[in-house]
Amino acid sequence: MGIHKFFTSLNDLERIFRAPGRFKFEEHNVAAHSWKVSQYAMFFGTLEEMNGATIDWKSLYEKTINHDFAEVFIGDIKTPVKHASVELKQMLAHVEEKMMEKFIREEIPPDFQAVFFERMKEGKDATIEGRLLEFADKLDQFYESFAELKRGNTDKEFVIMYQQALQKLLAMPLEVSVNYFRNEILNDVMKEETQINLAALTNEVLNKIK
Image (tube, rainbow, N blue to C red; front, side, top):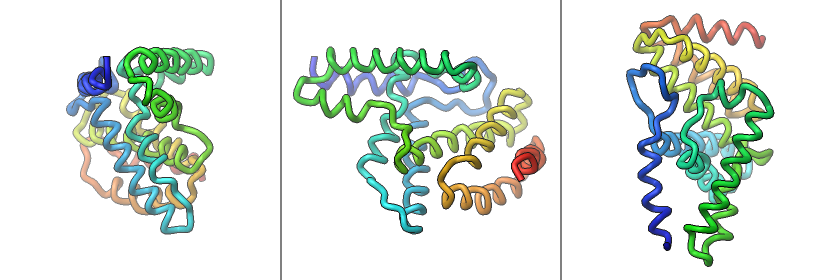
C-alpha cells in the first residue's frame, strides 16, 4: 500500500467529532479543528514575530496540521477524561505513539517514513512553535465552548471547558500572545450578546488570577 492509505485516512478525521456524547448546537470534527488550530497559530506566530521572536514556520505548520492525526486510531477523548490523572494521560499518549508508529511502518512508503516519524511526533514542546501549538489548540477549545454558551447550551461541561481553557490560555508562557488575547480578544468576547452570562464566567477566572 502506498500513500493512498494515508490520504484516505484523512476522510476519517472528518467523521470524528469533538466532545462526544454531549448535546451541541454546533458539531466540530477533528479535521476542521486541525485547520482552525493552524489559523490561530499563524496569527499568533505572526504577532510573536512582529515583537521580535524567530518563528520556524515550516515546523509550526507541520505541528499544527498534524497534531491530532493519531485520533484517527482512538477518536477524541474528552479533556476531563484525558487529564483525569497523569498516569492516564501518559498511557493514552503511549498508545497513540505506538499506533502511529505501526501505521507509518505499514502504510507509508519506505522513502517517506523518516519524514513522517518526524512530522507526526508530539508537537507540544518547549520550543516557541510547540507553545504556539498548545496555545492555539486550547484557543479552539475556548471558542468551541464559547459558541455553545453563547447560544444558551446549559450543559455544565461547556462552562467547565470554557473556564479551564481560559485559565490555561492566560497561564501560557507566551507573554505577547497572552497579553493580546487578554486585552483585545477577551474584551470583544465580553461585549457580545450571549444567552449565558459569559462576562461573569470570564471575570470569575480573571479575578482568581489577579
